[in-house]
Length: 389
Image (tube, rainbow, N blue to C red):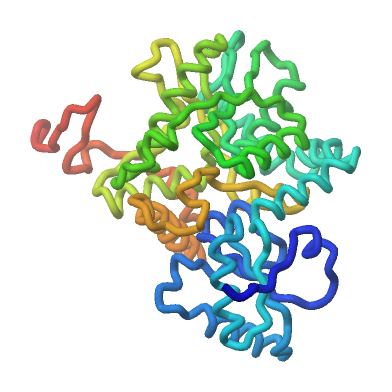
């Protein structure tokens, strides 16, 4: 096999000069964390082999046909083959050794060497991002009655931008000392790769989040499940989180779903499942008596989370699952991922002509007029408008 030109994460960070950086991962991965300046060309959407054409278009726009083109995926597997295809087409292409995971670790390592980074990040939550992040976090807690004196909350960390921010917001709330409550920071490890585990550990250390890891073999258990393995994995992980949280003396688990997750789920249910239901801000557990699930980031916009991440130069991963280590959506839940991206794009398009569309989607879940619907379900029992006609 011919040698494919490559570049290391260290060299990429240190190199100067013009280059084109292309992220081959799926759009959700790109949204959760990417190399600054990268362009997203998902390989999962490149079935026609258009990568060469798209890169040539970029080179034409740059007016410098010999500009280095650096490709990366999650762990440098698919990017190597893509770089080879570009080289065969006469393009000055390289692949990033180790992919985004290694690059992110290098960036986190550099940040950890700066003794003032943590103070600057925490200050941004009290100053620049107080209104869009902390105030909305506190508002959701009050509006939906998510916390009570004496609660012990298991803050569930997945390793992504949302759950890590949630942990920092809980720490900030704890400092206000309005009423007594306790926190435990819990990360379910269902069989992460070593690289993904290190990214989570390194970000937790940088952000001063004292994570407790709980290990399981969930990834192995669902590896051969063809239909909806991600759904099954999520259900099993939540069950483990409830159980370990309860063992730690917690009465609540907190998940990092934000405003955009909520409205996208509402619209996806209508468009793809033919049902209207909300992602609730809190739920009582049916299998673990006395336990509750809360979503304190319910009113926080994803755009503000992304701004906080980028302005503090933080780097996260979306899903640390080894099913998608090759940045390919070949398993059963690929459709659900693409549907969420499709729904996100639809909302963005609607917002161009109706700036209130996001607020209205959430407001619709609070203004259901029962005598104006054909039917509804209450506690699993179906009802028709004809019952009271």
